[in-house]
Image (cartoon, rainbow, N blue to C red):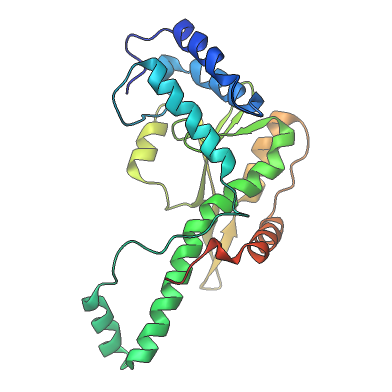
Length: 243
């Protein structure tokens, strides 16, 4: 549904105000709504599939928030992958490396574990950042509450899109951000030293953005992020799956 046609901000606010009262801990939701309605042409509201008027849209939008609040890496259980491994790819690896069936099976388990970990990392990275920058006046827009925005300052003047690597942004996400004030940050780049490829972490850039906005030092780091991961995953190893 496109909110930009035929819907006034007053209509949205009136219905939102009548519905938001039923949501527990709704202060952040109210603030995120405030950021969205101030955007040009209501462009920060996400596209939500399905027909309906603005009332049905707001109902769905609020439900996004409720479901996101219920989700936590501490309780999330990974789902098995939904597709079968390609037998031809298995045959390529098995033949090229002269592997036994048992060795191939172990490789497939390892592959599934690492892919599952990559999926889990999206939540973990955002939750670590959220835990660090909430005190600096930022809202965690989990659940796709704002288009291409993961974090927003409470006054809406600073919008952040978070990616794990420089090459993980898809074309649709890039298009949405074009000609907007949404700032992109990614955690992991690559640098070369003495001919060797090494990880190049970008926490200093994110810290600088947050510190400049809030006036308070922000000290996120790779060490802090890894400690956060260690704590969460040790409590919830089911966050990844080998199946």
